[in-house]
Length: 151
Image (cartoon, rainbow, N blue to C red):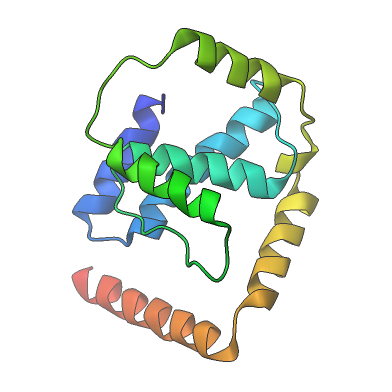
């Protein structure tokens, strides 16, 4: 269950009209903090990010599932089921929750290090095409311009 502070920051981001990926970033940040605090570990930075994105989808952030060409079918399926679970407020299975947490507690804390996150960001960026990078830059410039006008 996400912390109330995180949910509040996400609501503010949504009210400001920020992109779903920006809203989801709050959940990823929370997950990284949990690993750094020692609440649990993760096998890799990629897993920590995946847990954060899953929490975001379950909290109702309108994130699209990953592209079919870039991920496995099971990952896409999990993303779609997380999105569907957004409205459901059923009590999660205590046995399953405990098992997941115990498994994560056995993992290391290095996944949330600056070096691991930097490596993950670098490898992710290198997989993007020139066109995608250019589009991201243009979108960022547009966002900065619109925020400057608001102030």
